[in-house]
Image (cartoon, rainbow over all chains, first blue to last red):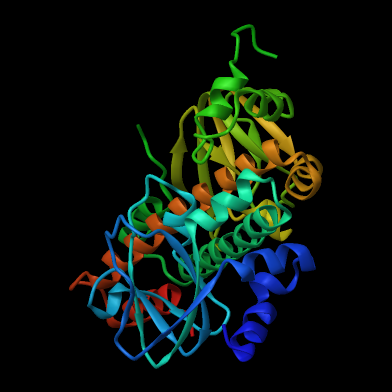
Length: 171
Length: 174
């Protein structure tokens, strides 16, 4: 890993708040991959090679499909992707992650995290806490945005759809 | 407390992400939850209230609803035993975005915020790690479902242009 990538990785918001021991353990297990525009960084439905992706340089899109409405997130420096399949063994890759510029990603393989976990290493605990905070924040932001939308609109049909959005498994 | 026996360990073990937790860790985690009963119509939490606990539904059904600025109430979901709820707001010190109300007699397993905070930060790894993973998986599944539905909604050809733009902005904030 180049000194520049090392510094960028250590300063990302995911890792910056961790203890030195935890951060160093995670960084030591990451590899860096460079990518170009339109490169597929994560493929939807892919069962193999589970890893957590951290964007170091450039930008990428998270897509459920090729249409405009399939775009579910725009990734920038410090953002993560792949956390669902990383922490949930039953979850297939739900979306494609595609480079929208040239850039670089840090990749933490699932096996590396499992190794830290088997040792009850502070790096595993710190990673879980950091990812939990991230996904919680993302869920709150989405809920707030949908809530604001609900306040702006009064179509009966939209209300039904919002109930569907937030509905849980009824089984 | 209700007369019916609630198997706290079984309820905690079925949470997503708990698959590889050791039996003693599941027992230790289950012991942290308090059993609380609610009567039909009682609120477990109200919208805009400070988030002070999360819950695991043990018995009965819970209606999750929201009320807009005009006071119109919308039922968002009906929860069934095994559902984890109230966990998203608890981390960000953000107010509840929806209310949860008992439908018939309800028993929940309650974990106060103070316990959640300690559990996430300083508890024994064998207990805390499965709990953190359960929360991550729960939130990710919820987020995936919301994103998928919003994307389907935005792709609907009957969707008015302005609404489509708002939905796309929620999906991919820039």
